[in-house]
Length: 75
Image 1 (cartoon, rainbow, N blue to C red):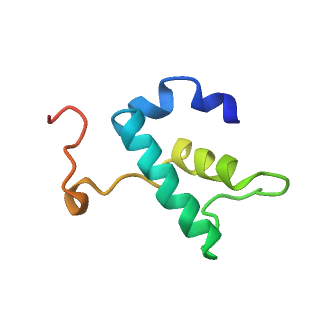
Image 2: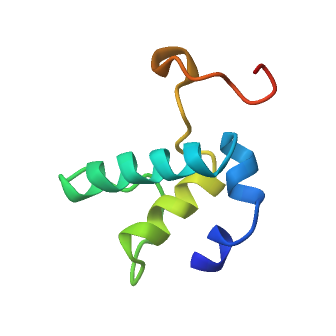
């Protein structure tokens, strides 16, 4: 699962490695504060693996409008 971080698929999905890092960091903080995972089958997965899977399954994404960040392709 962590191997997915080495590919460009995740970074391209959110618009770059910086945006990906920010999204992962924010979601990890939410999970550590008690938020429930948005995916099924979290047994034996680390929080980082859960976040990566949530991104891959389009369960979480950057709210470009609220954040003021340019959406990929609109820069």
